[in-house]
Length: 419
Ligand code: AMP
Image (cartoon, rainbow, N blue to C red; front, side):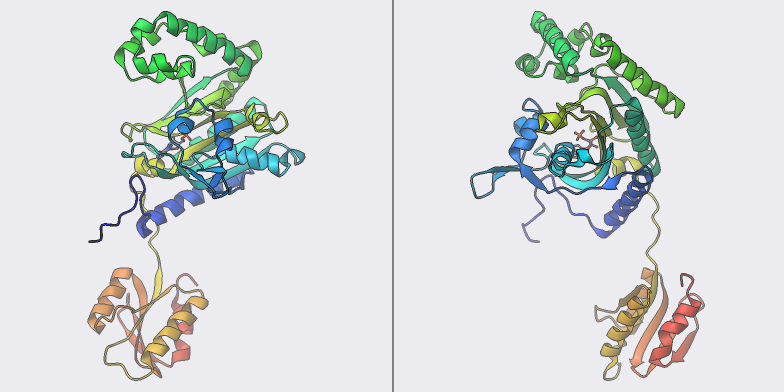
């Protein structure tokens, strides 16, 4: 075996996995398309500055997980670690604020983070995401949560739980962060070194700590949800009421933190019991200050992203429609002159007539070819012994007819269940 392998933390998507992913993509397109979201694709890499400014200097993503490189002209580029900052960049660049608001977009793309690989955590992974830019009302937050819920249900994700919180707006969050930082400094004895080192950079992360002593200390910490300004609290109440109306159960989690700095107001995360340590399947939040921070006009926005691999992992193997093979074209080793050209032509003509057709390409004996056709689930096998007289075998009925070459495709189309 060659010593060349896919890089650590990456994987190949082989045809059976690709078929599962296609089902997921179709569900996303159906659910998000029906709600007016249009597909967007942004470049695989962007200026590093976009993520430094957009995702936040203090986040793990920017501090240690970016794949950055020099573009050859002295500019630092980064493989996209997430989708929201690039979409906001595109919104500004294409003057989308002049379009009717909100601008609703969705994507399914691959993302890159230099993380320690484990089950459900990769260095290149795929996310489906949706963003609604230009609407501040709580209906938009609720719409996006319901859409993510519907997608996770449609994909068959098991053991779903929704955690919900609100971070307030930039101003209240700043005041709260100061209050929290003061609490942390006053209780440094009960905190891990890692948490102490991050107090002034990102005190919220202290809620995320695994260390038992830190967790104990955090029980007494002030909570953002208790510090919301009246209009933020009202916004959050409306989001909750809309979710209740939609029959979506959630758990309030005032300690919820997500690894991106741009969130304000509503924040949520779906987890699945069916996953191990990496239990988050998808999450999102409101990011009202982000577009302005990236140099655009003040514009509200809200969105989410869900991990494709984690959705498929927690859904287990879903039955997918078997690939229909209408025709397998067999060439007996003893066939006469011109048989392989005739076989090649028949397979091509069949595909152009809308049939799914496969041609023997491995040089098997006739028995082996028929066995292979059976394995593929082929409905007909055309045996080209003589290019002017083709034997067409109906694999289900078992009978065989001799036909002129031009009659083969019409015969299959007449008998075809999909025609
Ligand atoms: P985030 O962009 O960090 O909010 O992540 C959104 C979702 O993407 C998570 O809930 C995961 O399902 C998925 N995800 C994030 N990072 C990774 C990773 N390194 N590998 C696989 N999936 C990931």
